[in-house]
Amino acid sequence: MMREFKSGKRPGYTMAMAGAVSQVPVEDLDTLAYYIARFPASPAGK
Image (cartoon, rainbow, N blue to C red; front, side, top):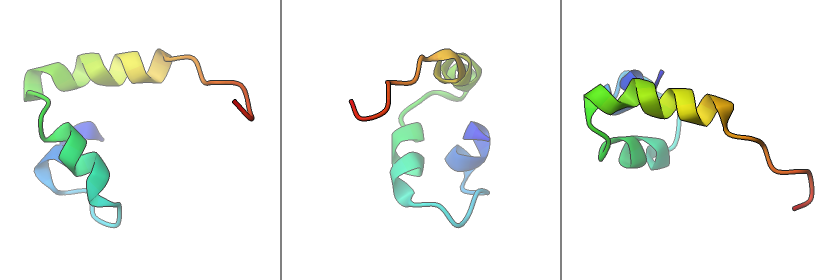
């Protein structure tokens, strides 16, 4: 999915994600996705 944001193939979303991902080298996208998927969510209301 992150590669689709970077390449512009993921329409219908704001440009914020595309802008953020555009600065990430392609070879780092899998590592970043792994980290984000395991990042603990903050408790509701905080």
